[in-house]
Structures are given as C-alpha cells and as structure tokens.
Amino acid sequence: MRYITQAITVIVFTMFLTPHMDLMAASKDSRIRTQIAALQPGDQVKLKLASGSEATGRLESLAKETVTLQVEGLKNVTRITYRIADITEVMTDRAGPGIPELNPELRKNAGTHAFAAVGGCQHGVALFGAGGGGEGFITNNLALSGDVGVYSFTDTNLFGLAAANATIHFGSRYRLRGADPYLTGGWALAFAGGSFASGINAGGGLNYWMNDRMGLRWEARAHIFGGESALISRVGITFR
Image 1 (tube, rainbow, N blue to C red):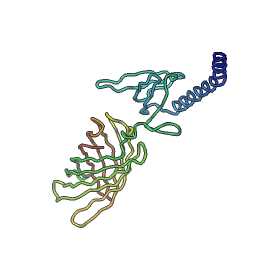
Image 2: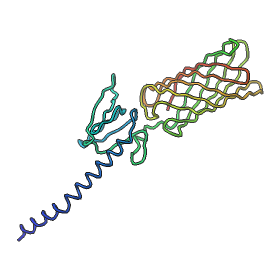
Image 3: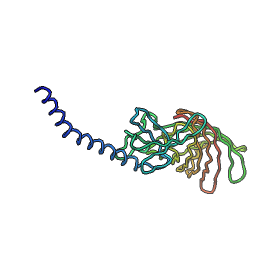
C-alpha cells in the first residue's frame, strides 16, 4: 500500500508541478530575451550563465539566439559569443526597466583633476597657468563640472579663470580603462585685481583611464569675453 501511495504522489507531482516548472522556465527565458533586446551595441554588459560563470564586456552584436561581447584582456580584446539559452541574468551600465544596474560600486559618480596649461589670445600673446577642477555625473553620460586656474600672459601679471560647465562624455562612466572623450561648455569668469569679466567657454578633451581610479587628461578649450578670446590647451591627471 505504501508503494502505491508513493507512486500516486509521484504521478500527481509530475502532472501538476512539471507544467508550472515549464511555465516558470518560459517566463524566465522571456524576461532574459526582453532584457537583451533592450541592449545597444557599445553597452557595458555583465552576463551570468547557467554554468555558474560570469562574462563581462562591451556588447558588439545581437542575433536571434546569441549575444557577442568584446571582452578586454590585458593585451587585446577578444570577441566571445554566448547562447541566450545559457544566460540566467543580464546587467548593464545603462540600467533600464527590468534590467539591473551593473556593479554600482564601479560607477563613476564624481571625479577631480589637476592640470598645467599653455595657450594664447587672439592677439598672439602666449599664456601659461595651472589649476584644478571636478565634476559630478547626473546621468550615465552627462556631468556638471567646474574648474579654476591661475594664469599669466607673458606680458601681464597673474589673473584667474573659472568655469561652470555641462560635460557630455561619449564613454560610459562604468568604463574601467581606455579612452573617454568628452565635450564641455558653459559659463566662464575672468578675474584680476578686483575686476571681473563674464563670458563663455567651450571645448573638448579626452580622459585615458589607466585603471579604475586614475587617468591622464588632455583638453583644449576656447574662452570668449566680449571682443577678447583665448585658446588654452591643458594636460594633467584625473581621479575618480
């Protein structure tokens, strides 16, 4: 009698539990496919696989049943393709509806930098200086930034330049290494000996991250104050 009861129990669980398990598996597969469909080439992606391993890289392409990542090694970048059926979880740096955020602890929320500068004005007079600044991200690619420096034309005393800008980064703020180009622009202030002049500034540059905390920075920026203008090139170091 006991064996008959066990057999009936197995049959009942098979009849009622298996369809539910199949439904849950189908639901999970549908969720994974929906998340993957929301990705865009260039997104930094982390995949968890059914084998228990993980894969992190930049999305290169999507196919009907596969995902191809560019995985950065120490010396080169490798293209690796994964089957969607083997993926159990998707995370990305561009977290959206239903997609978890990729490694929040690696997200660059703010940064600082120091620089040395050389340049000249529209009259052909050279200038040089040094300063520092910082920025804080408000979206994945947009940051509010500011900087101040002390400068001198070769024929004048010291003066100061300050700026408050919006900066658009073309690389993800999760990027751990490599190039991060950007454009920047906004309000500018020149000051010397109790006198002030308000103007605008615009330019662009490149951060090159050597690791997840420190990088090299180059920037070229034009400052315009009424009929006066100066073009300044900056080289320095940046931290996040």
